[in-house]
Length: 382
Ligand SMILES: *[C@@H]1O[C@H](CO)[C@@H](O)[C@H](O)[C@H]1NC(C)=O
Ligand SMILES: *[C@@H]1O[C@H](CO)[C@@H](O)[C@H](O)[C@H]1NC(C)=O
Image (tube, rainbow, N blue to C red; front, side, top):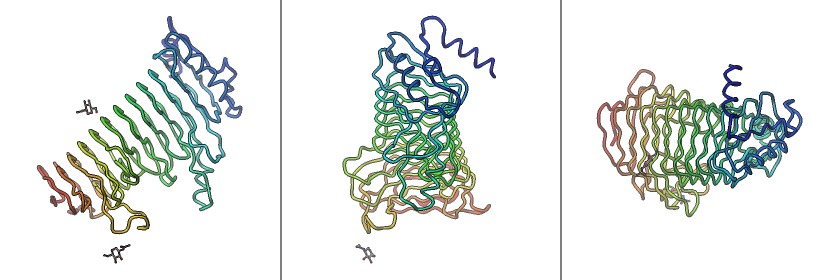
């Protein structure tokens, strides 16, 4: 492995490419000294270079209190080659919502790296019911284009592990994202107002959604994911405020869910704020003991306080569930609970094979229109 890594590293620093090693800028691989400034200094050299440039983080543990890697840069062929582990502060501070951020960056590939958000102390605060800050997202990609993360490990972020916001053409491949199943709000990857995002070949297990799609997500491609523990793969929650953009053209394919709260889910608040979810394909999933394998919930209103007896203004249409098989941890394996004021349209269930305790499971439809074809187990309610 060491040889391979060294060989790869050589490939990166050949010829025309400038390379900046964070250690040359004063970073200390001792897990204690704050290396934020050296990391940013190396980035600033690479970003300022008029030719392809690489930032190298060698093996070792680097404590980085916080880092904003900002563009625009002078070249659109930037790389970060990370062999070591980057550690966040083991404590937490209020008013800080992002740990490592890439902003206004175009044309960046990040290879490898382990990023440890060390969220334990914040989770303990939240578990104790004290008044605690929200916490930081470990990795945020914001207002960026054409960014690749290949083989990154993210663990124990205080809040979301990764957020992709206001960006286009972001690829995440071969990621390993983990946080304990009981850690609060630790969504794996959250997307918001972004187009052309792909997430492939990744393993995600956290205390919240493995992948969540907020408003304004279009043309997303998700494939070959292991999800669990966690809350599954979710579009939403949507419809909690005015002016939300819709979610459209999302394909989620080949997912193994293990012990999750949900499998494929679409969730909207029971409020009149308008929005839409359309042209969604959820396909080729194995459910292993999943509480709600297929679920549309348009009556989300936690505590029933802010939205009693209202119905969702979010219109859901064109949603395909295809080839979903395995086991449900509850009798209700398919639950399509749509809005009374905006019934779901064009829901398609194809080849659904879900059992509960080795027996027939159930399906429930409310305000849901569409059709069923192929295997229908539980029998379709459409
Ligand atoms: C839907 O998204 C995919 C990427 O997942 C893209 O290739 C395709 O062009 C998009 N379709 C439309 C109609 O925009
Ligand atoms: C909601 O509906 C229930 C049942 O119809 C009714 O008892 C309750 O008073 C309603 N709540 C509000 C706030 O309208």
